[in-house]
Length: 237
Ligand code: SF4
Image (tube, rainbow, N blue to C red):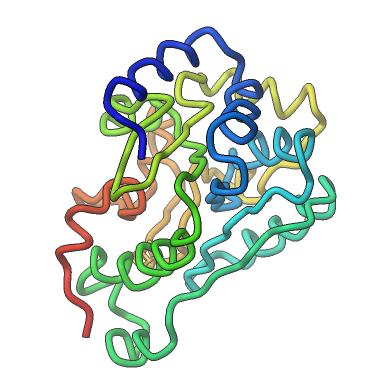
């Protein structure tokens, strides 16, 4: 685990590095085989996936399949994996026994979305991160107020989170897609700028807040994998 001073120094160092260099440095100098990318295969995931394909096509990528995703996301995942020749994408699912107990009718998202996210995202992620000391996140500070407080390097639940794109703008993301000829998520053209589970995502109503279509009409803004304190306190079953 990194000390506070080390985190501070790393954040200062990363200010001067490109996102690709941050990725390389984190893998080659800091965590070696103890780091993975946690990927949603959402609207902007292809940026880091492309960087990973340049670095090491065998690099571990964890995809959380909540079993509530749009079919377009599953298809897009397959498209990108093929396009970038990625060799090590691990698709992880919620524990079937826990789903049977806590969400037998598949409508927990309506009654208690935090508990549903814990069941379908947070717990499977924590289980699959056990072998790692750190993970890479594609979050950007422009996405919402909570993410605006984050840095290149943060610590959460005894894991280090590296966010190489934290200071990118949406314009930079779009330019990266164009410059590298990367396929876009098919739902973007239908008006979705941020895409999660089908039940909990509507079309983006405010383009300056790309996540405005997530858990629309509620005060929930995160699934819990980035801010898990409230979620670890929830009890399944
Ligand atoms: S985003 Fe919605 S459906 Fe998906 S895990 Fe969270 S509450 Fe459940």
